[in-house]
Amino acid sequence: MTIQIESKRYPVEDLAHAIEFCYQQGWTDGLPVVPPTERAVQAMLEAAGLEPRHQVAFITNRQVAVTAEKIAINAVMAGCLPEYMPVVVAAIEGIADPKWGYHGPATSTGGAAVLMIVNGPVAARLKFNSGDNLFGPGWRSNATVGRAVRLVMRNVIGTLPGALDRGTVGHPGKYSYVIAENEAESPWTPLHVERGFTPEQSTVTVMSAEGPHQFYNQLSSTAKGVLTSLCEDMKHHGSTNGQPQYCVVLAGEHMRTIANDGWSKKEIQQFVYENTHNSVAHLKRTERLAGALTAADETTMRPLVPSPQDVLVVAAGGRAGAFSCYIPGWAGGKKSSQSITKLISDRRA
Image (cartoon, rainbow, N blue to C red; front, side, top):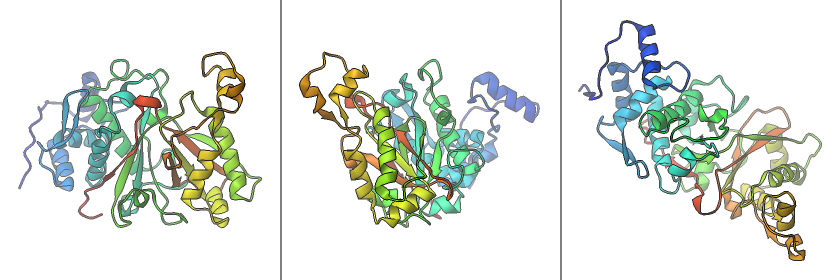
């Protein structure tokens, strides 16, 4: 049965006219989009097994219902293949979750992007990159799924740069910010299994995030040495109130060094938590906290995140090179955004 699309149709002369028409309507992220034909949109919906009117999400602060048809249109525009549609749908469900808190990270001057981490069988089947050039260009699934989510935010929810998106500097992850965990080579429990899913299930984790901060350590042959370098970098990044969460992405060489010492993800989380505290005195000296310096400030410590569990550890990145990275979450305190993991309802995953 043919799925009936309800969105408005626009006549165009040819492909070039269609692309320029999308620019004129303000539907692009600055790059050309794929014109969303009825047939292409239908293929997206069929791949996800969704009716056009199905409400995937409701953005409370915007009072906007996000339907499957609108997601499908923007997935086509982003360049997605139909089989990517269930991943996009799950990511939209994630950013609509109250714990993710759409209004804050989407509109803040802090300029957060939507970091997406894909886990489970769908990651390999759809060729999501989890290795070399992890955050770089070259993989259609990574590039277009993240772009589709941003186009939905722009075209459906109304999060337009300079209007409801007030990022002061932003970062390139706002085009697309998608990775997969390297479950095949990882010595650790995958992120989605840590969060209550089975290895056979496929998920996407969404996190409101700054850009990746790379760190380097080629000297140390121990887990403690590598992670000490990481913590030294992280704690000097830390804001006044800390962040709600950090994602630590450990690439091949660092992953093997840490695993060879027998460290689990829980031990990594605990070490990072304990070794990224800042003293109140340091925060005042660097003018990240107001007030006169007191003797007690020297021994009063502030953690970077609320708990060890708020350090998400992901095995991903190239096999060679003594580089890994950490990714700060958006904001802290009462307005903090929590990462959300959603099941990908893929009939083949």
